[in-house]
Each structure stands twice: as C-alpha cells, then as structure tokens.
Amino acid sequence: MKLSDFDFDLPDDLIATRPANPRSSARLLVADGSDLHDGQVTDLIRWLRPGDRLVLNDTKVIPARLSGLRHRDSAQGPVAAKIEATLLEPRADGSWAALLKPLKKIRTGEEIIFSADLSATLEAIEDGQGHLRFNLSGTDFDSALAAAGAMPLPPYIAAKRAADEQDKTDYQTVWAKNTGAVAAPTASLHFDAPLLAALIERGVEFSYVTLHVGAGTFLPVKVEDVTTHRMHAEWGRVSPQAAQEIAATKAAGGRVIPVGTTALRLIESAAIGGKIKPWEGDTDIFIYPGFAFQAADALMTNFHLPKSTLLMLVSALMGQDGIRRIYSHAVDNRYRFFSYGDASLLIPAKANTPQKCGAE
Image 1: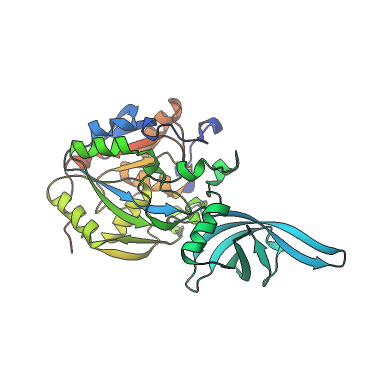
Image 2: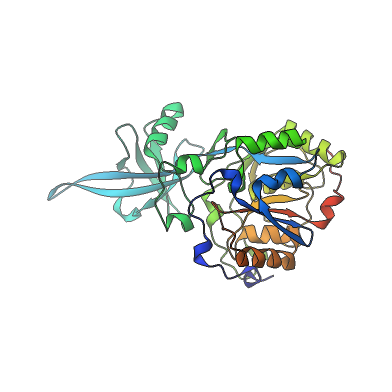
C-alpha cells in the first residue's frame, strides 16, 4: 500500500481559513453507501435516526502558541531575542514539551518572558523539543495562558494568516470541557446549540469521550509503504458510562457515529477484541484500509489532506475507490477543506446492519 495511493489534486483556494457562520450552515456531503448527496450540516436531523448515537470528543484546546522574549547580557549591553513557543504536551514532571523558534537563540537555564504574569525556564532540549518549566501552575497558569496565548491553528491556516481573538471561539467546540488538546477535533466545530437541540428532539443520543489531540496530528507521512508508518501517541479516555452507552446502542440496533477521527480512533482503541470497554491511556492506533471496525458504524468528519493518515482512515471506512469518488465530487463542487472547512457524513453500506458489540 503506497503513499501515492492516497494523493489527489487540491486547489489551494479550497483551503478554508475561517469557519462557516453560523457553524451549522457549513456544507455537508453525505456518502450513503455509493450514493452522494449535497446539503448542509443542519440536514443531519434528516440523515440521523432516533436511537443513533453520536460520540463526541470533549477535549478543550489550549491557546498553545506563545510569543516571548529571552533577555541576555552581552559585551554590548542587554540584548533580547524573540522566541516563539508552541506547547505540545505536559510532561510527568510538571514541565511542558514545546517547539521553540529559533531554538538556537536560547540556552538551557534561560528564561522566556511571555507576559507580565507568565514566564518559563528552559530546562532541557531533547529531540528538537524544549522542556519548559512555567512560573505558574493550576488555575493561575490556565488564566495567564488564556491571556497571553493564541490558538494553535493548523499549519495550512497559519501559513495564510495569524491566529486572532476570534479563533479562541471558532477553534473550540461548544461542549469543550477537559483541557489538554493543542488541536481541535474539527468535525465537532460544526455543531451549535440549535443543532444539538434539534438532534435531541429527533431522538439522537450523545456520548462524550476525551482524546487530547496533539500537534503530531499534522505530521506528514514520510514512508512510501504506509503500513510501516508509526502514529504519534495521544492520551484518551472512554468512561464506563460511555462504553455502556455505546454497547447499548449497538445492541438495540442503533448506529454509533463518532464525530471526528479522534473520537473514532479512541472508541476503536477501546473496542480492540470486539467488545467496547472502559479505557484510558495513550493510543497510537493507525487505521488504514484493511482495518476491521468494531465500534464505529459511520463517521462525520471534515475533508482531509492528501497523503495524510486521516485520509487513510476514511479510506478504511469507505474503501479507497469510494473515497476517491467522494473527494473528486468534493473538489469538483468546491467544498471547503480541512479544519475550518465543510463536513462529510460517511455511511458505509454495511451501516444499515450494524455489528453487535457488547460491553465489558
């Protein structure tokens, strides 16, 4: 299975730099088996059935991009260098792994001042990443970071414009709860309060899981044989309640539909072996064609990068030929791509006869 099998031509002007407003007015391409239907996200109330269950990732994105100054005395007097930091993940010892630019401008033991309240000391450099020890912790850190930081927009948006205050709302789901992600579960950005209320009235049910999306989600695949690619690990949790709800829905004949590839990867991690169960830990599950889905019956997701692991995931669900048709239709009909783009609802033909997946 070659990387080139997952390539396609994408016009640059189809990359969205701002989301639809209101959120649920984004376009929705429904692939119902081999049939394609154009609509809007609000049409979910027509495509979802009473008893279907949406699985939602309740991770909360932190404003992980910081700009600060490193001060140093020199023979010519005090000098300062601008340092950009992108927080990646908290480490077990309380420090943060971060990308620092330019890394050559700072040495271990030096301090970066990000605001009057927030600063950090570089404790170590490993594998091209810095380990930052902040001067604050807990809610004090959260408050100072919220004031000083910017949302970590994906590289393909950040290359076109800088993050601003509007992104602190736009790049966060309406149900965000558990802080820890440095990238949003972007399919969930299409939901707003009116749509959620309409789905509840329709009889659609919801389960919440947590997967803290890491910056590694944007890393390119660098191997030609995709089966040898190693995924980055991300922390996630499927609670006993969520596991029981998912199992009950499948037992009753309803469809389990993750919203986003993060929620799908997490529940499939919790269902390895055929039974959905409570689960917590780091997952590096890699889903590509040939994968046997145990928990997900369908998927709502955005349109993904060529040659990406996410494109491989949706190809596993719909088949490589099916995804080529879907993406060709999306490009021809000028759907907007990536994190702030439009959405797809991918329903394999077999989703009308869902597998039974018990609970443990």
